Length: 179
Image 1 (cartoon, rainbow, N blue to C red):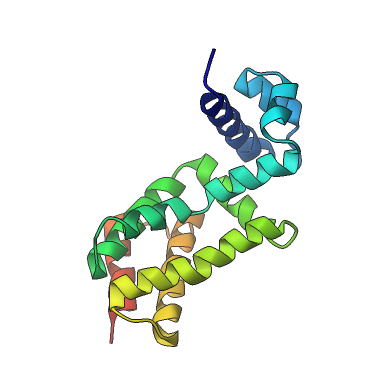
Image 2: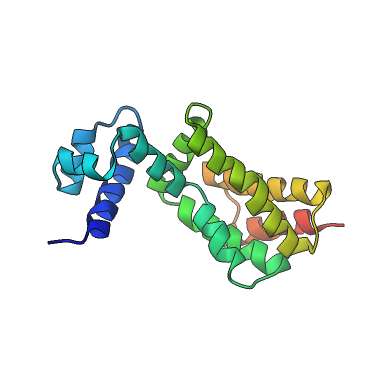
């Protein structure tokens, strides 16, 4: 018999795949259960409502994991920004992750928990990155962090064609590090 955590992970992984393909609201719980190889009842055992499963997948689709891991790496300044950029681009070069990110961003106003998670990224985590990069936080540094993450989001959208990833990252870092 599998451990509870393994079954939950299997359901979340299946939900990520199904939601990325069909959308959070067009996908059914039956489809998630089939993809996970479990019963629909077991899906509801771990996630009482479909909304709970959507929230879990949406939170995982945000770059919270990337930012947190990079902050704990001990890197500072340009090296920290480069690591965040590389990991962000790696994560969102996957069609599934990119689809889920944009779906999560689009439902944030209708799902307050997701909205709060996004606000967390846009406030305290970005402030922590700014502190590690610049040594202090002020309005200018907060804006620079938003420019940095906005540039990464644009890259994930695929709107920057014909530019080498490393060159793009270097240019973005150069811009946000200018005095």
